[in-house]
Image (cartoon, rainbow, N blue to C red; front, top):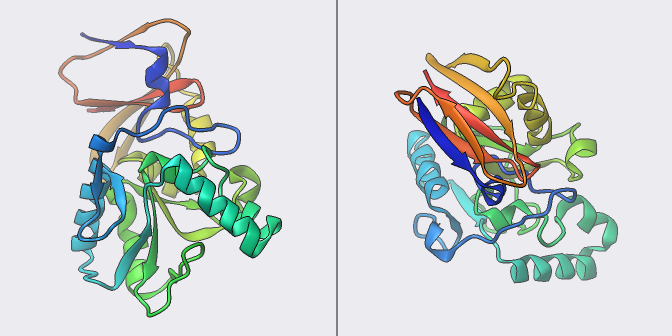
Length: 248
């Protein structure tokens, strides 16, 4: 058996952390964990950048899709929020711009994309549900991405539908979220039904078998054991727990 020690701080890190108005970001991203995406000035968490580049190559999009906004510092998010309040008003800003420290962009795991056009709106870039943009959506889950803010989920996410905003959560979680039409908030609630010391979620996705379970975070270190021969990943949720993913 393999034994993993979880510390309280680890619950604030990982591909599955939830960042919203109810769960603000608890840790900043170290600069050495960020990469510029392709030849742009847009920064992303290193693995997110690499996987997104592979996705772009898989759909042969060339320069048809362009990155608009990726990682933002707290100061940048403050400036964007204040600027939108001044230019667009409170109602618009509350719908489309997250509060500072409540923005996924501060994680480096989220990116806004646009169809390459002469004029691109920074807050609401155009990413239609057709052509190369829809080809991106059809392929994204296999590469670990989800469309984070969907129509009909505004009451859950607190953000209006944003068909341009994509979030890296990792595979197979992306495919499960898409298959169930979950918001990330709903998915983490769902995974919470499969505790470490109970029945685990066992699924087959893309002809691969996975075992997924949830461990609640404590105020002290927690030991979790599982078969040592299995590849695994663990992510904090920023909501008081951890999600384990085992490849079977």
